[in-house]
Amino acid sequence: MELLELIKEKKIKEAVDLIKEAKPEPKVSINDIKSQYIVNDHNVFQNEKRPKKVVFKEKLDNYGNPILQKNDNGEEQPVKERTEVDVNRIGVSFQELIVDRAVGILLTNPVQLSPVIDESSEGQRKVVKMVEQLWVANKMDYKIKQIATRMFSECEVAALFYLVEPKQSLWQRISSIVGLSNQPKFMIRHKICSPFLNDNLYPVFDATGDMVSFSREYVVTETVDGEKKKVTRMDTYTEEHIYKWKKGDDDWKEVDERPVIPNPFKKIPAVYWKQDYPDWHKVQSMIDRFEKLVSNFGDTNDYFASPILFLKGIITGMANKDDRGKVISGDKDAEGKYLEWAAAPEAIKLEIETLEKLIYSLTQTPDISFEKLKNIGSQISGIALKVMLSDSHMKASKKEEAFGEGVQRMINIIKASVGNVLSVGMAQDVIMTEIKPEFTFFLPENTKEEIEILSTAKSSGIISTQTAVERNPLVLDAEEELDRIKDDHVNDLSGSFV
Image (cartoon, rainbow, N blue to C red; front, top):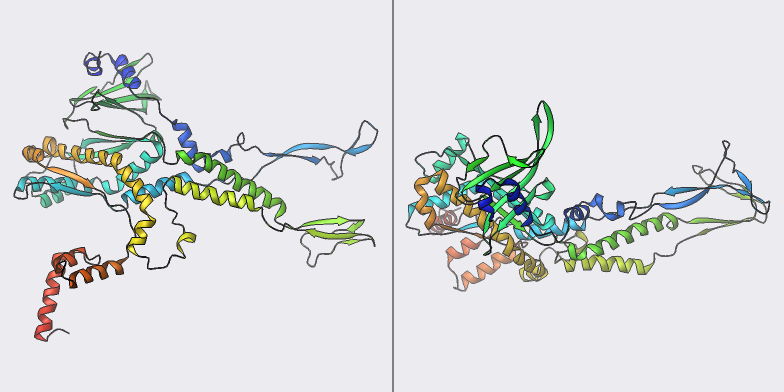
């Protein structure tokens, strides 16, 4: 029996089972992802993965003297006890850096909403303005960075849209900008859901790949018979309705308050993003090895970085550690000299450097640390910048395919809310209006070079003054700047310009 039929017949247990069975097993468990992404949970910090060092120390009596015992030969020897000494544990958050750089390349420049409309249609222009204002009101330029971060690390994330009563001041501003005669009764909002936020996400698709339903399973604290207890709930969204269930003592059942709610959006108000592996997956073993090498190297430094005093003969006195001009005294045959570590093993250094390069290159992550960039110079050409970041841009282009599809769906849901709920009088214009997201990958600017190129193109007659001004990175308002240029020209001709 199909899912929607089970839901309509209120066979909740069967419906929940089908919802959960429809989701394939993840390629990487969320527990493994957490332990890899959160640096303090890395293997290097786990005693079972990186055990403490076992040493045997002489056992001392209350006066600080070694406790002696006779061996099988009747000889006295110090009693030694087993002691565990902690080792260096150096975690390196490569996973977080890889994700942050991928998000930065893709979304440092805000996503632009590009309308495809009939410019002569006032209604379609209003729809575009409305969507733009709702986008700003929901702080989407910031929230989609959070969504991308969770997608690239947790492998799945969702945005759920819902309606609330609006603040009057907000709608007054939006109505004034858009030109609405009546203020809407509702405002669209959204919530980000992901595994790290303790959400279980269950999309269900049909044979053609269209989403049939979307469910979110989560835990809330409820007061039952005067006692607070944790209750598992599930909200299921379809095009027509929103269903709310909870897990009772026996099995799943409808919630007591409004178990079925009509869906005002007339489409599933959820956007779901998914990828099979976290962005660092292919270099995880290298990161583990890198941390182990660096931690071991720290242990080695603790033992050998400082000079070691080697003594020979009979020593009659030692200096205290706080004495100045320390002196060690001995008889006439006593000798002392320092053992020094001439150089760190080159093989270890080479392996650490090689691993670091591979981690960056195999994840297409730009290494833009201070050490790498300090020798480049302040004025690197635009072509050189593009070449340096070409690998990262290719990765961002691939990311855009999956992530951009979800952003397009977010725009469509916001647009649907305008025609179905917020301003039903605009429904027909909403149907005729298309808005697409445009991504501009991050690239450091060389303002001087850009202006020189525009100036050369303008003087060569291949672009107009207006185009040069519009493309000028120093200009905020091209029309206003053109008017100022005209005024400057008139003042120059009249001789009154100072």
